[in-house]
Length: 49
Image 1 (cartoon, one colour):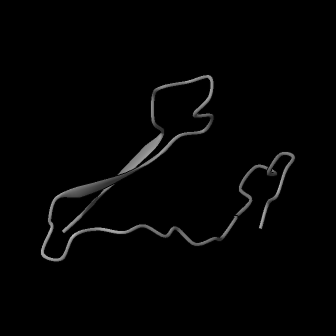
Image 2 (tube, rainbow, N blue to C red):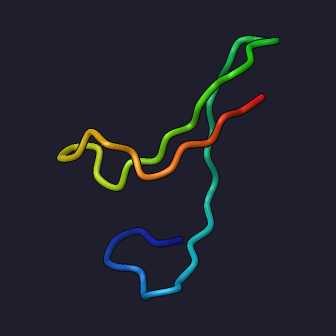
């Protein structure tokens, strides 16, 4: 886990993402923001079926 600082090039960080959704809800999107405070554009997006 990377609590703070910078990740080396080609480095790997593992973690857990937790969320709630309504039962039978589909088409949800998970978006990753490098810095949600200063940038409103996401870096990655996953669609959950």
